[in-house]
Each structure stands twice: as C-alpha cells, then as structure tokens.
Length: 86
Image (cartoon, rainbow, N blue to C red; front, side, top):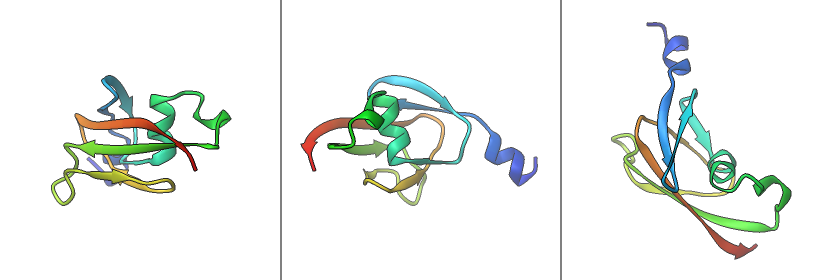
C-alpha cells in the first residue's frame, strides 16, 4: 500500500459519544467541534474545550486548541464542550 493510499484509509473516531468515519490522517479543531456542534460555523463567538484520548503512541491524550490539529487513529475519542465566549 502506498503512502497516498494509507492517507486515504478511513478510520472511525468518536466525538461526544457519536461515531464518525473520517478519511484523513490529521483532523483540525474546527472539524472536531463541527462534528459535535454542527452550527459551530454560524457562532464564531463561542469557544469550546476539546480533549482527546486513545491517540497515537507519542501523544495518546491531550488538548486540541483553536487552530490546532492532531493525527487521528482508529477508535480515537474526542470530548467537546462549550466553554463560553472568547
């Protein structure tokens, strides 16, 4: 399998208890928040806290900050909660 084919491989992630299939190796803060709160784009004044578990070996747990991104893996879990206004 080529590197390009590996990048296209679908993995299942869980966001706030809901499973999503993604076809990418890296996911952004905005993409994760939008999965949890589909109206995120219409409310840029709202801020969210994003944490994750079951990530890659070098960073299995962490916080995803606005503008940030993280490498995804199968069965990775994200927790997104509204934290107020920025």
